[in-house]
Image (cartoon, rainbow, N blue to C red):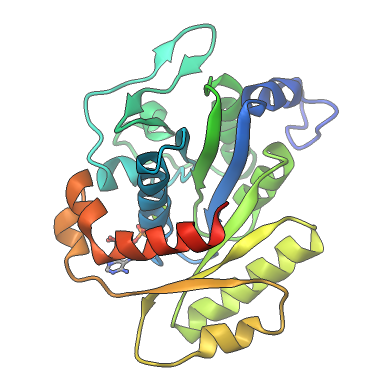
Length: 250
Ligand SMILES: Nc1ncnc2c1ncn2[C@@H]1O[C@H](COP(=O)(O)OP(=O)(O)O)[C@@H](O)[C@H]1O
Ligand SMILES: [Mg+2]
């Protein structure tokens, strides 16, 4: 590995990653800055929904410290295959790749450049087929991981998750500002775990040129559906996501 993993020109993996992602029509990163706001659940249900609508879908879990999509989707007993690169297993019709295949159940206390390198490695080895959508689940925070996604997955569009919490909203605004300054496309904002009738999120978004895509209430049946795809798809949460797909995904 050449010293500066951040430098596009010096890192030989840059070309490989471009090739690996070349057959993917749209790359959608689910982001939001904070943890526990429903990024992983949304990414998982969005992938399932798009797949059931007949699209070719891939799902990539880039949350190194807390990968969780395999738990949400109940993915067990399927593994990537080595084939001059790593071929993601297909499950429920979705190509699934996660850092969990490399870290197992062990915590991965990586820092700074090591996190970037792990992500680069995963992007460089993974052989996706022709996909309509690659949905990418991202870790909390608006620093390194987001910058890496922007740098290495150049066509990524962002779906930004918010909640009705003012604390979350402050971070969401930072994420939007940062993405806007970097000219990164934002599909829009989803308000999750909506509380009461406050339209604060919608109102505050007016200062940005970013669509408000819709809102999801707190779904008290979701916990029971974790790990069970059919139940997830029957949930109110999934119905909201489906509505958003119909109105905002061409
Ligand atoms: N609308 C909702 N109603 C009920 N529970 C939800 C909702 N959205 C997310 N959750 C739950 O909240 C927890 C955190 O969600 P998760 O998707 O892991 O967040 P993040 O990826 O942003 O950290 C999970 O247990 C998830 O099932
Ligand atoms: Mg998550």
